[in-house]
Each structure stands twice: as structure tokens, then as C-alpha cells.
Image 1 (cartoon, rainbow, N blue to C red):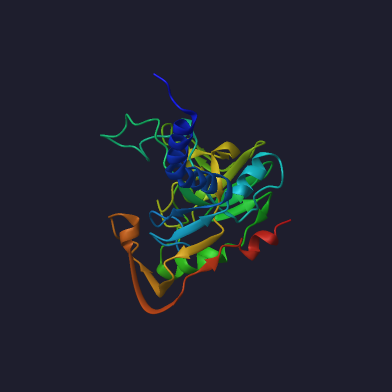
Image 2 (cartoon, rainbow, N blue to C red):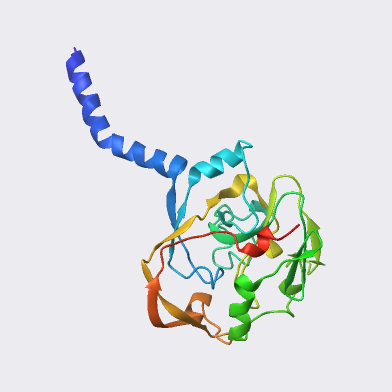
Length: 255
């Protein structure tokens, strides 16, 4: 069979005509920026369930190439360390899905080389007390601020052995993250699964882009036993929700 060159060229152009948008979309989301959704209440009061965040992916690639780094107080999107997956993430009947790792959204507390200590709900970085007004004011007003649980008094809790480590020093390429939700059991973070390696970080949440508006008041029911995002009742006037996500000033005051 003889195939004419112009026929092959026509077929290639036809394939490329529908494949080009797909290739462009993949490159755009992997190299430039992408959107992710917040699932749950572990970052309240800063972020709410179902909000959409903009992730500038080019920043992450630069950091992985050794150009710049994330800042303390940044909000990161990442996968938890593979070796740390346990019943907290996958109870029966899904315990066999060991290769699946959900993306999480947490606040960056400690950088490589930092020493992190957690005691009585307070966080200390390299011996300096971190002022947590960006989250403590809300949770104390709700009556939910946790000071007595294991997670409120440890930088690392091994659920299997029950071993509690109040202080850890981060190695090269390790990042310590915590959720802003400081109720008892309000966040699964580095206190449970350990530091996050740079390779597992998808990027920094730079802005909230959806919904455009949100109600001002958020009442959290500390005694509720259902899903954390269902603990919250919203009310009051609405305000513009489009906003940049910058590190709280308390992180800039750290030595």
C-alpha cells in the first residue's frame, strides 16, 4: 500500500488540532499554575471547606532546583510521607490502598535546620515562642483551643508505639507543617506523619480565588462528632473572599 505524504501530514494536523489544547493544559498546570480545592476544616479559620486556591507551580520547580525556598508561614499543598500512611488516613476497608496519598493543605512552620517544639498548644521555633494570634484568637473564642492532648504537647506522636517526642530538629530537605485548626484532633499534620520532604511538596497556596464572597461569621461546634467541616455554621453579612495568602507577621518577627 502506498501512503502519500500529504495524507500523513493531513492526519497529523488533524490529531494535533485536538491534542494541542490538552498538551498546553498539561504544561500550564504543571509548570505555571493550577487550582486546588480545600477539603475539610483543618486550616480553619484561615481556609474554609470547598474554597479554591491558586498554586504557582513555577515557584516549586525553582525551589527544587535550589533557587529560593518556601517561607515560614506559607500555606503548602503536599502529599504526606509514604512511610507514614496509617489508619489515620486509611482505615478498613481501604487499608490495602497503601500507594494512594491524598494531597493535604497545611501551614509551613519549620524549615530545614529549624528546631520545633510543641508544648501546651504553644509552638517554639529555635527556642523562640511563635505568636499564634492568627489562629489562637479564633479557637479560644470558640472554646476549642487544645492545650492538653498529645498533639498539643508533641512535635511528633507515633500512634503505633505511643511514643511522644516534644521536640525535633529538621534535616536538610525537610519541612514541618501544622494545620491552623488547633482543636483536639482538628488536623493531621507533621505531628502525626513527620516532616514533609521537598520532593512531596506540590506548591504554595498563593491566593483564594473561589468563592468570590463568603459569610463573615463561622461558629464551630467543638462537641460535634461528625466530619470536621460539618462542625461549622456560617452566618452574618458577606464580604469579598478573593485574597492573597501571605505568612502571618508573627513569622517575620522570629529570630
